[in-house]
Image (tube, rainbow, N blue to C red; front, side, top):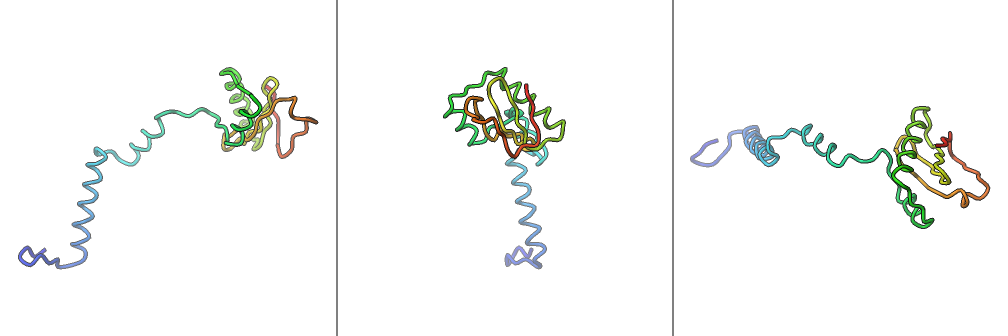
Length: 132
């Protein structure tokens, strides 16, 4: 750069100057952590449970007054793990008197019901069942 007239001699010099400033500023803002370090931190904070409940399943649990104990949740997770081990994609998992449809690859409970509400005990669009 020509300091007297504040002119740059090439576009490469301009981009190099501004890119170096931005990368140094970003590293300082993040405390010199790499992307991989930040990703590991975010993943380790608040380890999520094995299964999550979809909005629909959560609404079904609430509307049907189904409250699962910690032990029942653990058994449901075990059932989902067994379904995954067998290569199932959409599984029926039965825990006590409750039935759950689980999307195994996404580890998501899609819907939940009490056996008294399942009517004819007909379940569709599943490729396997686990009874725990």
